[in-house]
Length: 266
Image 1 (spheres, rainbow, N blue to C red):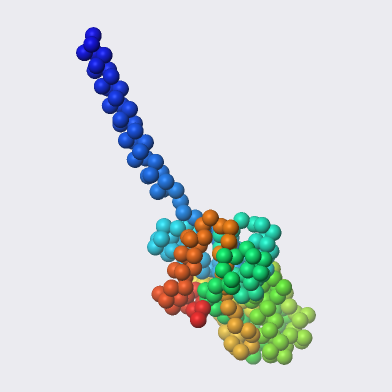
Image 2 (image 1 turned 90 degrees about the vertical axis):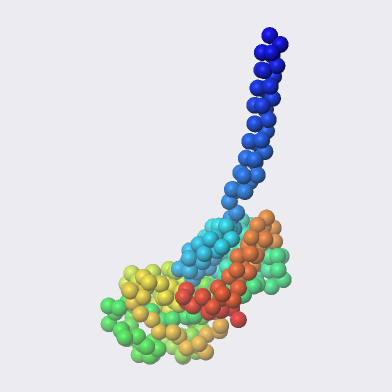
């Protein structure tokens, strides 16, 4: 009887010990498997580039980017109104500057990460082919899509370029205004506009290269499109958000931005 009792006690002790070991080893394992995620609000011009960049960054760091897109103005307004985000990637300097001015960023100025390029795009089956910068001057078209200059930096660049070419007043009645640069490209692709002033990031994708062709707008025709970012001061993922920005701004990645239609920040 005493032997059976001792054996039972031993078995109980062994079971408790095993459970403690399992729980002790399982807890750190579970914590290690908790996904590290950064919630990003990104300008619409980045939509063609971000999936590949996010995948490469996750492979390098284990940090997953959860990305939502929109015009820079719309995203900045969402942030100012309290929308949750860890990182804001804008298509210019001014909209992240409003976030800095509101005291919501963890830096005193926006952080540049790339420079954008404005191009004129049309479908390959367009009678306006082959395209040139003179296509706009010749005026043999009825509609030109641009992003809303009040919301989208590429829209501002489009207006500046047309003004520089002394064509804005003449072409204003033919403008088709899109909410953001992604929608601008959709308007031209779908045939709702004959021409579009879009981002090189979009025009450089395989799809848009197969569908149409583009010419770059004169670089002196519009102010430099300095794409900048801010990390949210109240984010509990600030370190991971800055890790992505540091990776994006590293020399190796900067010199590979050309494949996505972007130029290095500096």
